[in-house]
Image 1 (cartoon, rainbow, N blue to C red):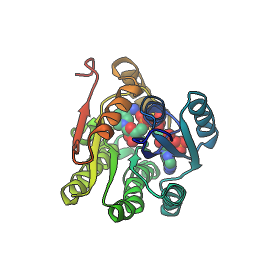
Image 2 (cartoon, helix red, strand yellow; image 1 turned 135 degrees about the vertical axis):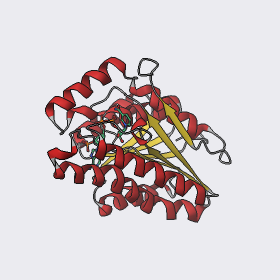
Image 3 (tube, rainbow, N blue to C red; image 1 turned 60 degrees about the horizontal axis):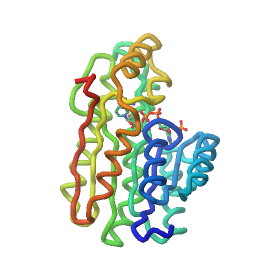
Image 4 (cartoon, protein in one colour; image 1 turned 90 degrees about the vertical axis):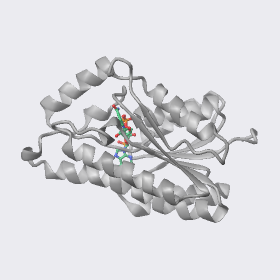
Length: 245
Ligand code: NDP
């Protein structure tokens, strides 16, 4: 970390998709030190090797955002090591699509636990540390699903509407810590590969492949929010590919 403007940036859900692309962008192009968390540590370990070979500084820790203890250990571990946390990106998410009457209640719980509760765990762990320093930046990953409900996405949308409300409320309360919501539309990632009704997930996968943005586009938007002066907060970024419209 020879760059004096280098920040300590924690990213949840960094083992694939938007999180991994953001780690690459922030470590390589911006010279930030990234601390990566997710459950699949083999993925994180390989990414950290790549980032270091490219001249970046990075480390990882196994993280399950549904566990408050795990999130606390992730955030406090980085804080103990570096004496500060500049940015927390609450990115971990799951999307298991199905109609409500299919009553896939375990998947409802999982989406609530990862997308909403996981974000709350991140805020609870990082906010007091940032407040104590009088500076910091919390970036929550929303979605275009935080603005519009589609059939088969009711519960996913509910979690993202909630993340949007939480982010806006926290921003309104905050004078020292910056708070940003980044809401992408379809993005190339592994989001449609886990859970949900198989037919509905396959249709979503096809739509994302055809109409989606590369994950690096979202990473670039996140980097732009971080790069603003400490006194400037980008409140919200909504972005879609031109193909999605
Ligand atoms: P991916 O499936 O590629 O990435 C999701 C990440 O979340 C993975 O790294 C996964 O890691 C992690 N994750 C899932 N569950 C947990 C958990 N319990 N604890 C810790 N990490 C977890 O999808 P995306 O990159 O697309 O998703 C990133 C964010 O972007 C999500 O919040 C998603 O809702 C949002 N988003 C995505 C869009 C898209 O079209 N792709 C559009 C709008 C928003 P692991 O399994 O190793 O734990």
